[in-house]
Image (cartoon, rainbow, N blue to C red):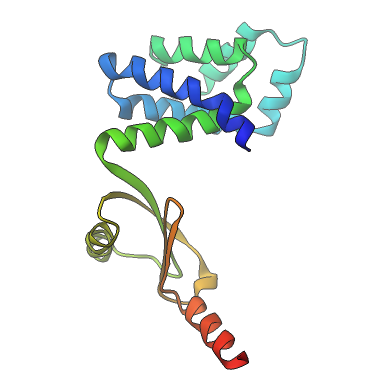
Length: 178
């Protein structure tokens, strides 16, 4: 979806620049993440495409979905996105904003897939090892994946470190077939 990324980039960069002086990027990331989640809903996108639904009705609907009142900056951004018919780009805007925020903090998102739950102490140890291995601060997210059988699989950007039992078994299968 290069086209969606191209559409989203200017919005993410503009929001990042304007939020830098007035708001904590983490606070912006929170409301932007919620907006992004709502904008991923097929029913909401279908409603947004309905010509009988006005922009202000859609803005009011989405504002009503939030648990807390949206800051003025968030309301203005939402209104702009809807007026420009860019609601479907919100998840990508969120992703690109997150990348900019991480670059500012000198960190990167990482996903740790595991077949079993990882206790907090073990996760801290894994985090320290991975930060040393990838030479940067990592924001870890843990996902359960029973197909791994055991071990972990780590995805940092476009880099993958796979120490799972499944990967080892597949490697052994390839070696035996040769």
